[in-house]
Image (spheres, rainbow, N blue to C red):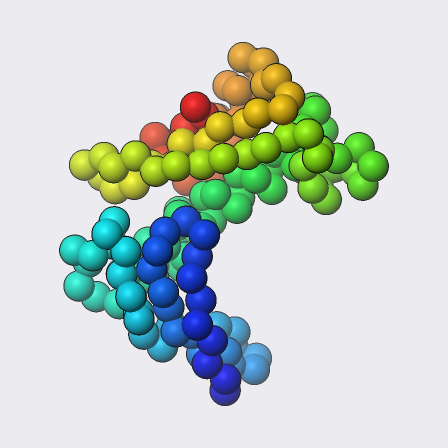
Length: 139
């Protein structure tokens, strides 16, 4: 059961994970907490907020990018590979976090192609249904 050091691209935390055949990945310990998660005492709580929970920071960021690439109506997917594969090379998605009383909210900016108001509304509606009210916003 090998151990792996993992640092998410959404914060500066560092995790040690155990890879178990058949049962997947489990947290071994939090090696380092970033400033945003420093006040959390329990390792499982940090791991949950960053990765494991259904509305975790990683799942919100990755889920939204996958949704943008897999919805042809938005016109953001790479037409050479088809919807669901990747974003068009001209599209750049950047993200940041805003601290709120209820936690960290993801703010996503899409550049390279225009996202009209109807599509913005649809994207925000999808994110609200997936992750909860206010957890993801388009910048």
